[in-house]
Length: 288
Image (cartoon, rainbow, N blue to C red; front, side):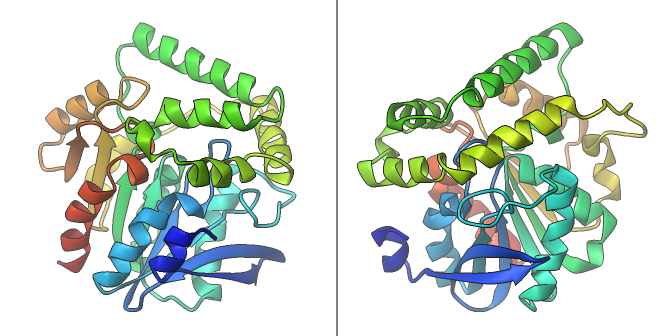
């Protein structure tokens, strides 16, 4: 854990859940906010260090954990997204948190959205940051090009363990404010991108690529807004990948009542790029 985390009053802990040792960070007391990181190479609960201190000062108990197969947590036999989604309520119960707010970045936003649809009584609020999979698609040709580019990027990432410069390039691709990539931050992110974390990333990528394709049935998540009973706020970066700005704008036009925000000067790592704006928007929302 770095100096920034210690100065923010963040403590590092571990707990055994579903037979796995899980590393988590905690700060503050009050209503619990469970923070869920994304699934790209190097993802871990450390992405929320900038957010945990302000949440604690605002009267929340902020808890962020390394999901199974990420960071310093154990790697499960099942590397699938459904496993990680089902793991969330198990962790909530193991920590004795009761009703929690979910604060989810990137891929985890879809997991949190699904949990809120399935078990709204368990979650007080839903905060979604930069989750592209929740957004409505653009016209088929343009959307297809975006998907193909993302698949090529993921294949390149899984080809070999990154060196420190590879990690820097990946961060620069996902951050608008490159000045945030200090030597300390870079070293921390790199440590979460190599060794067993990289091995799990490769295995997860292979599992997803080889999994049988399932035909979609029923409406997409973005079409189920009216079914969502948990108070929700969604925040996206204007400069995020995969035509996010156009898709967010289209969603807002389709659902004017949606609590949806776009932050200028922000790419995909919303908790870093827009840390202050995220806190400005989410703290009053979760206190209401």
